[in-house]
Image 1 (cartoon, rainbow, N blue to C red):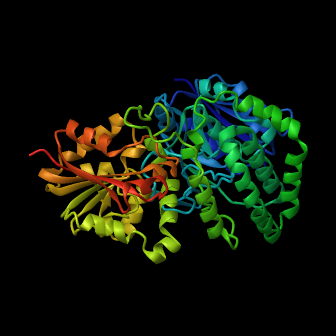
Image 2: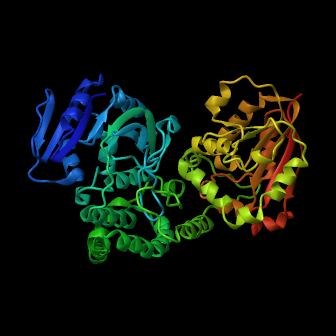
Image 3: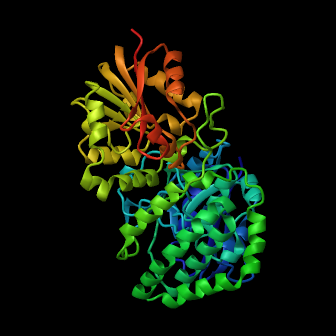
Length: 539
């Protein structure tokens, strides 16, 4: 595919020539388009097509102009102060061959220390706040591709047909937040947004809190929330935005940009007709109206601004409100069809760092002080599982109580890292498959199947049964009604009869099932009530 790389420049650009030269060295078939928004000294680099804008259009407007003057089937955007590594553009282009992916971003490192991350894709809070994901982390910790809420505007790509379908960047944003706005629209269009670790670019990044930047960030954030979020999401988000705004204002007063914060809020309050017009164009029959449920995070973990007092309490309140009020289909009866991957996104919802953060939040505070997991650990111990293989181990909530020699597997790299920090033995599926393992005594699948469609769940069980000794124990744990409705990443109701059907279909012998820790009727009101289904592996 023919590729067009768009670079937008303005003012003093000390690294622009290096940026363009690096792009020219990449071995992919591409053109480089430089949009001159008012560069002080435009460099002369052979093979670069320079487009002079009528004025400073900002990054968003400049990018739109660059796309209009380009011809590639794939569009790659690179900041003028970023330098791509050899093969980085090709890595993004190759990733876009998967038609389920709409946008991709690379591993953007800090130019002054390339061992550290600038961004590996950006989280987006339910209130729209977005920040550089993984900022300051060692690059070595982010070597697995994964879905992300938003690309980083420093280095990302998408197919031209996706750009046209989404309407491209909004020139009215001028600069800042245009990457998050486009990414959220991509998710709502039913396409994934992904991080590609092999596409590396170094970025001369410095987080400045100049007043104009903070004004644009806040204006564009609120504009995007009010115009992009579907009605079902917006109804739940608006109270959380109103709850968060005073805290943001306090930070703005503390850090000296209160005037810009108030100016941004005033702009939004006085441009209702403009916002309504944009909303009509953005929310017209989205292909995946529920996609944001599994994309947005409830925890503010950014590292650029000093966190205000009360942030932990805010995280807890927002997490409870977002998860507890999530409206999902009621669990079907035995005669009704279950939800499948065609109805909702499945695995990618639990793959990102944000999901790990959510798990950690659910373990903190009063829950940790009261040790609410003690009954559940006791329940597993009394089953005498021996050396257990914990599939979907998450942050190790169950793994920590299993016998010595037990091993966890999880596709979430961040969750595996948490397990290792807790001195538990856990691996990604790729790491686990690359090691020889003596047969395990038991297999645990706790709170996994409800995140997967039927076919994926069946395939997961079949894959890991090979690591279980003949006649080994199998434990499947799934949530009851209240627990099922409390988590927006759930896509399928899995009752005991569903678990038994899956197990018998793989030649396993069901032993029984029960409700824990309370009798079955409590599951309609108590979110932590579980179905526990027991079976034996084929002999």
